[in-house]
Image 1 (cartoon, one colour):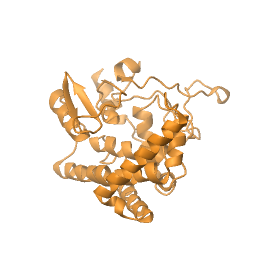
Image 2 (tube, helix red, strand yellow):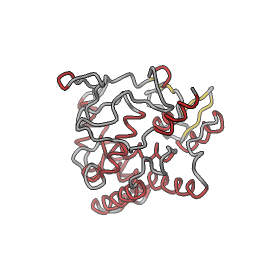
Image 3 (cartoon, one colour):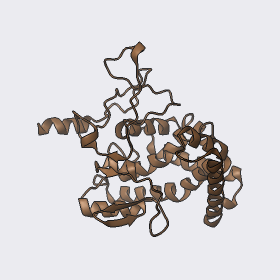
Length: 288
């Protein structure tokens, strides 16, 4: 949901109180005292109220494909990730929560919360049906979904082609878990190995829409163009509670260009397609 808001260039304020929607779900938003829950309904609401539309370049056939893939990711791939995170690798998840600070929670309380969450996930997966399969079968389903996404992406910049669509926010939001929150697991090995196009896709979106997000465990170095090898510094982590492209980033060039970091990694290899941002850049220059 946050990635969608950034892609649509809509400023937002985060609240971390843990309050659920009337349906007992997350995410939910409040806009002018009107509450809307569920990602799909939130997007429909924002499109109607604010006139944003990330799918304007998609035809009817592409919109149908986009919806089908969205449901595969949200209703199927999601549960295999939840299994990997909260059932099969619960101890690693608890360690990551400890490293992230954990707030006021003690180690004992984190242990309790993690095991309660594990029970909830297993119960929900059983009700869904996917939890009735064996561990190997669940991972087999996960791999099929990931291979389908890799095949659909191919060598394109975004899932549906050279332009962003709502589907990219959905796919990135799920693949980011395999990419950065499941170290050493089968989905991480797959996305950073055989399905490397998915990893590069995630990195492109992270650099473009989350420039303040640097992951300490990856090998990507963010540096200014003026910095030397001996003075490379990581981009400082900003406050996640409020996001506005206008107020957060200064002196931007092309439309929807969020990152002020080079578009290459530390080896000099491009993380972007050769035509990155050229359409936006051309449109911007013509408007001057």
